[in-house]
Length: 137
Image: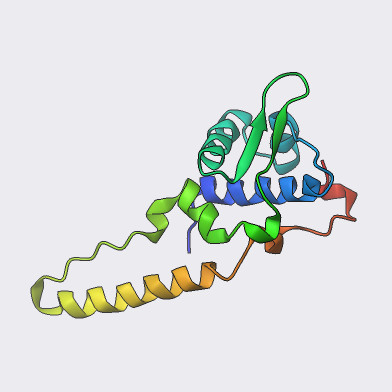
């Protein structure tokens, strides 16, 4: 399975924000980009999508940064996918031709199974042990 870099980066950055959630600490784009090795310019776009989806909050200014809008356990993987890569959940199959109907049925079933599976995960599942300073920003 090939995920978009955008979705992968979003999950990694959100995992970093989850580490700070309990302390209410804001994270700066530069530090998030550095620790997760993501281009900062691209990260800004991803953060904007997640802010528009109410997954994160942002604060401007010198003391500004980003923070989760709610607890990591309350942010579903499905919410993240819908925010940054909604095409991953789209199902567009043509049921034309002799085999088209059956092919569409099978791929539709696979798509529904995928969606059901990602609904079981939350952001909390992505968080690496907070005791490991290597992953803390």
